[in-house]
Amino acid sequence: MSYPIIMATIALMILGLALAPLLKVKLLPDRRLPSVSIYYGYGGANAVVVDSEVTSPMEAIFSNLEGLEKLHSRTGDGNGSITLEMDKEADMDAVRFEVSMLIRQVYPELPPGVSYPEIRVSRPDEEERVEQLMSLILNGPGNRWEVGQVAETVIKPMLPFVNYDM
Image (tube, rainbow, N blue to C red; front, side):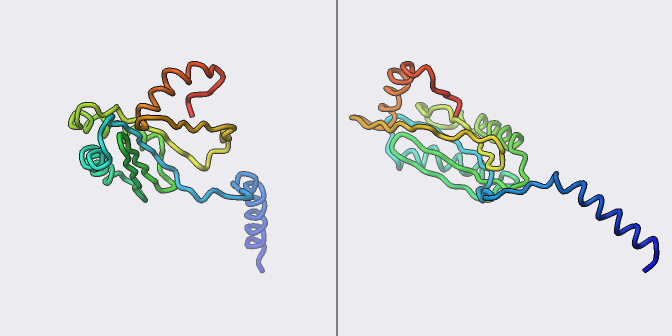
């Protein structure tokens, strides 16, 4: 071999060794995609009404998002949610902004009584994850929305140590 080829090979090996610590290596990599979840309530409406009057119009506006891999929705009596799974390279801050803009456009067309949708972003590749220490399941008379209102007004103020931003 000629001298320049040997030197170029050695230089590339040194460069590779220098950049190796910058590689992300995980023992158990997360297979979930980054996602945006939208939660909304429609007090007193049954699941069929929530699906036809709220979930379907919102799914229609989100279906054209750039980088959308999968769209899942769940509808129940008085509430619903839509989860948008994005590709791994999506800028989640930009996606959240675009989703909030689309919600602002469609919200005036939704029936009166629909709560303003809540947006949550999930980034599975983040190094700092908050592990759930405890969960609370509430059961009681009435629908989920009514039980949720009791939890917000009565139980939540009694728990001063809870981080509500999760």
